[in-house]
Amino acid sequence: MNEVLCKEAKTKEAKTNGNVAEFTREKVTFSPLVDIWEDQQEIVLIADMPGVDEHHLDIEFENRQLTIQGRVEKRHPELTFLGGEYETGDFHRTFAIGDAIDVARISAELKNGVLTVHLPKVEAVKPRKIPIKTE
Image (cartoon, rainbow, N blue to C red):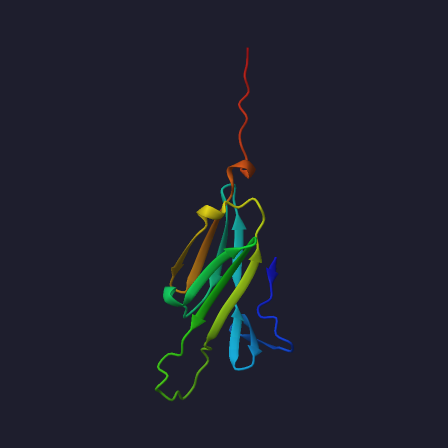
């Protein structure tokens, strides 16, 4: 369902804090971990994007693809850390979206580093109870 990040020639993958990271030239790009669930009304994507705030987050829908991009800035760049396990870089993930989604009603919220994207289904594909007439 998802397409892998940047299409650079030779990339080196690394596993970092549960996220897959690609190193392309001078930049680290993470593929955020995503849970996806579906009910009769919508499909919901929940992505872990620690350190990303709403000013560094971009969500786009084009050509039936949903692209999520975020950036994590260095915390306290003026300091020299004695140790550091927290990576900074970009988040990038793309999903192919079918025709069953009502594009005009896609919404998203970001809270405590967790992005939730709501993809409502169009009325035509929602299950519908058919009433039965009796004489």
